[in-house]
Image (cartoon, rainbow, N blue to C red; front, side, top):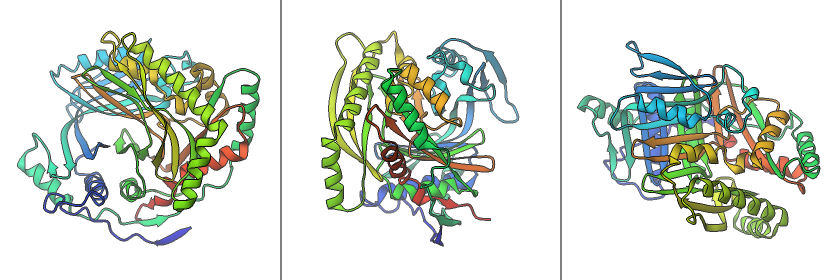
Length: 453
């Protein structure tokens, strides 16, 4: 259904007038959306964390992990010095070797890891096609930041800083807002849920997250969709990117893993969902229902226990703990049961090993992970690609943060799509699980902007 033409969203000069706390996220997202839409800075990653927006562009190095090689571009562009290094075993070791080979004393990395990044760790590489990219990272030559104090770009020349400030005041949207119908079950999602329930009750695994893809039949303005969608969401993290032909924008409800470089490692499992944003009384009733639902509570407790075991495997003995248990967190069009599990990271493990152990998130894969992942490869009719992977920021100090790519829109070539899933356990009902995917798709589907012709 086509609705009224989009009115322009103007970033405004964040530095010239301090916006209120309520206004700032929309303003900051619009600034970064304008930078991305301008095309002046090449490929980019936008990442929102703790009230600060990061814009990474103009790659000075690039690392791409494929099924068989690590491709390293030490100087992307006309003077590219590309190396293809064969690898096998764990991706963490291959990436660490590639980063060491850059010869940079200090670096910060931005990019993504796709769902198939999990395949080597769980012996599932036979399911991965030869042309699949497992991860794509850049070391940016330009980093710009937007926070309540204004715009900054450490190390940028005056001309670049002037362009950043000028573009920040431009309109972001030029297309038409659309409302995407997500109510059709075109790939027999309910039937696949019923198959998974039978397999669970036969003892093959305890839980699996099954997802479905919703095609968008037109070209999408991804930066404009990000700007519009950020106004309607309350994410743990948000992101906007264009790397290697893939575009994505999303409003993530949780972290896969975060290592602070000082010894702490955390993960934030979410499991258990109800709709949100339907009015105060309805939302409160849904919250109470969620907290009393035996199926949702059992699913969440199962996820927390599994995450505890994973953190424990990379943490110093006796340091793993559950910091928060079964809180309700509001994330856009849904509310979730949420917990936080942390530990003191074992220096022998390190952040990349922690990512390998915790990836993909329990709440996007299943329990136990190996048979659940095999079920996903078997029961889902198309590749997940970046969906249920992670957008990642890391640096040479040992800091690494990977946020789960859910509540996202994706575009590549002439295709654009949404995707959402639900956690399937033995008590699951296909109709309710399909309804849950619709609720989650509601975090993005109402905000899609058609690209201008």
